[in-house]
Image (cartoon, rainbow, N blue to C red; front, side, top):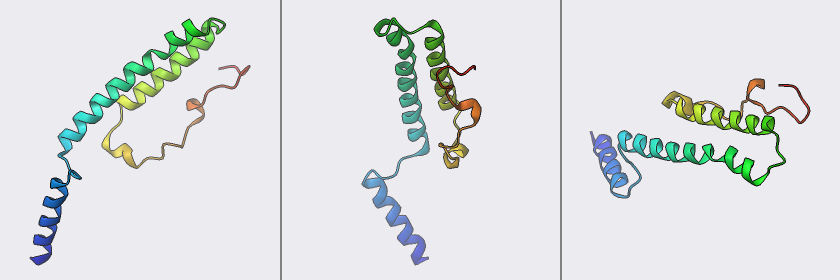
Length: 102
């Protein structure tokens, strides 16, 4: 019983210090941050097209595909995905080296 009361007080203190928040608040913050990041990512191909006119349409298409993949990956994230290894890329996730066929 004493342990439960100590846990309750510790949790109340953590909430007071702003260290804990309800899950729905975290979900809303992450959703808004993801939407903002997606909008920013979507500007990359157009910016490259304007600033680097020497890039071919194939180059821009590769960048557009990578941006779409990143956006879709973020949009499909689930709580269970938190424990997955972000650095583990499959061959389909890699960017082809210059001169490689896709």
